[in-house]
Length: 242
Image (cartoon, rainbow, N blue to C red):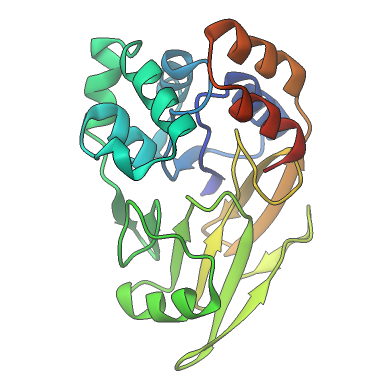
């Protein structure tokens, strides 16, 4: 099966639509790794758009915060403001949908987790040591994560060792015989100094993976955020990919 793997849309509808358009005809199902809402101006629209497609959806820390499942004091001031703004605008139907989603699940050879298999909602796999430690916390050959907003593939070399591969875009990576933790990056708020929306294509039959980036009209999302009264630092950072 061909899978569109995406994560961290963060209520950025234009980025989400642009990814869907760019990948059109290349996938059969969406695997979404969490944080559908938070930060951005279109929470309900993003939930509704995802629900139009055959999909698997995980719940992330910003989803949990908007649902009241996570103490927002864990967030910085701007993120707290965005959480409360989002919480006050979610429809009952979309709230119920998000509330039903797990933070982690297994699908065939793949473990899906928002943050990490060890701590699915909150842990960031950024540091090398954290990545190596997490290989012991899933049993499948592959684990797909989001949360960091950084696209990366981390391949287990041997016990307590791994190799880190930064993405080369639109290049086919063959996963066979490779145990790996893979992050597709963020659709709606990249943080790797590249403001383009990030996504990946996975073929579960051929065991291939491809990283992709696509530009979207950031200035329109920024205008929508300002019109909504969302914090200016969240608006500005979109243009810098941070």
